[in-house]
Length: 435
Image (cartoon, rainbow, N blue to C red; front, side, top):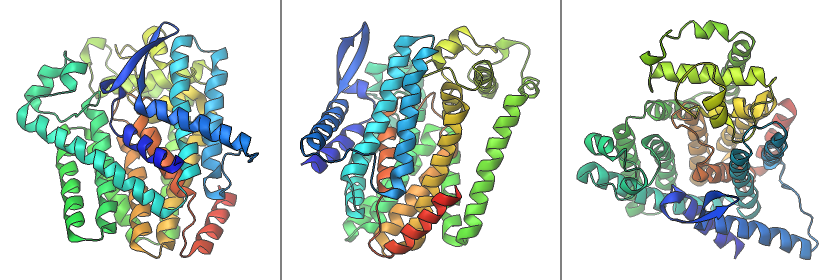
């Protein structure tokens, strides 16, 4: 029964924007959306804790070593967010920030708890594909008809632009959020294609893959289109390059990114020279994004590396910004983690991300069947592509479907492959000692 409830939770999460199908309730003077996903997620979490207590079962993060670090990091991240109440300036926004991190941790905890085999993961992928097909159909309907069933009700002030350009958006808040989902859809449909047991399912999977690709380009989201090309590059590199060479390439790339960020923190002034002196010269252009980066790094410096605290980026951009942008979100997932939660959490997140990627690559190299080969390389490719795709949306913190996706990846990280399981376990344990 709990596993079936997990499947329903995943389906509910993949419906997209909770504002499109939820009840509005008022808590502490703030309006909250009570969606089916949120209700079932916390209901199952409470049931699991109560059941463990009644059966005297030890309550731990996870017993499988491969996913233990990932869940431990998620828990540490959540605790840090809670503790940040001591220095945040907007406590109402802090509540929202902690809430979404709680969604992330609980999703990872429950999916890791109840999805214990490759068959469970594949079943989840198939259910996800159903919802992705729905969003694709909605996207094509919007492109051809210019009629936005959900978006016109949620954001009537933007509907003229979307109708003119025929952007597909389904029920998401903006085209960038939808394009990130389409990037995921490409790799989910790849798994469905490679694991299909008959020609009809193969044809439907290929159709979903092609549809998602065309719609992704129709969105015009540069970061997600670049993310697609990067994910394809990762896909072919994993297939063609030897394991040690692949790890060296990835580790060197991540190391260079960290060094660049640290150098910028120590001397952010050199980036400001690239900015125009007149704030009127920018709007939502690349110059505006550069100003957001500078503001984010400035926040890290003035908070002594601790970050502004959960949910407080909007307050700081509105009241403490060094460079004017007229925006209240950083439009950069990596910078948002750094500026909000500080250097330590950011570095731990990089390690978590690196380990998750390498875990998928190791599973691909050790897999003995098409099913695990497809799942592992598709997940690894998406993780690689998300490096760039992550800077498309104004924020991913509120994207609950993405938190569920990370939970699914962590759950698969903890799955021991039946074929070659000894090799996978030994290699990943050796990796844990290296990182």
